[in-house]
Image (cartoon, rainbow, N blue to C red):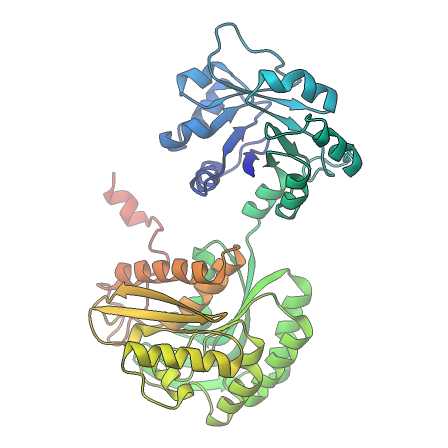
Length: 453
């Protein structure tokens, strides 16, 4: 089905970036609807949109701009029911009855019929078409591929609309509510006083990727990139209370679990997962830090494997952790394939073996999920700034899943993000040991802004 998106009636900060993102995703048309905007204001928005997408843009006001910017067309409605003399371009129109569809459909490239469902953006604007009415209109040929459903449209309506003959669906309130509301991602992990790993790395990653980070701290560490000097766990009861507070007070989309420290803390995390049943849980089995310091009590490993892993949708051990869980060295590509499949079947969850500890110019992460392998090769970056890579990868995956990506695509996006974060940090010297990643590599600092003038 054709997907059309209509802008909100008011302008807002960053709107051009949202529009560009939607067009990049391959939507059929983008309608700019700004009923109170001046010609100058609409022009200003258009000039922030890449010109290559103009052929997909439709205006609801100021038809003279269609030809000036070589846009797709103009949309007729009650505010502007007629085209100006000499207009050349595509035409669409709003219809609020089947009689209007019959009257205008042949004159237009397509028409909107609304409201099909109760409106999301207009309170009290309820559906006026029963399923029987729509089915009859489809049989009569009134509803066909040129008729686009509008009004309360959500993705789950696609099959219903297709069955009733619609050629597409137009989003308004649903899309903008989703895009402008960051998904809530919960990180359950330890605190890193040096800021490069643990909760701190998770918060940076989730924020950089457009999520809203919430946290549950399992332990406080005194550490820097050279090593861990001390660990003080949070009481298991307090860990559960933190999880309860977040899960009952916020719409958590995904959960990332990092350092869990003890079997008692694992017990409380397991209890909470069973109670709240989050949609997606990724666990980075933090056992040893990049600098070689142990971060998990030995008596907790059995609890991690037996109770926590089976409640997760994905675990992301690095090569050393995977070897510990697998019980054997992993040296070749065939070893990795056998290990990731074995661990997936053992824990009844998807497994991604992070290849960051591999030697050679090309490293490869391997995912085994639902009986299929997925491979993620990347060039190895020569740098000592790798503190917090596992934390960053797992929280990036959780955030991309929260944004709606399927797991294989979420991992691919997360890999691209972490690769850029490593490249952006490789020459930065913040410590004498393993340095941190640059999670905000795309952010313009005051110095960069000054130098670019």
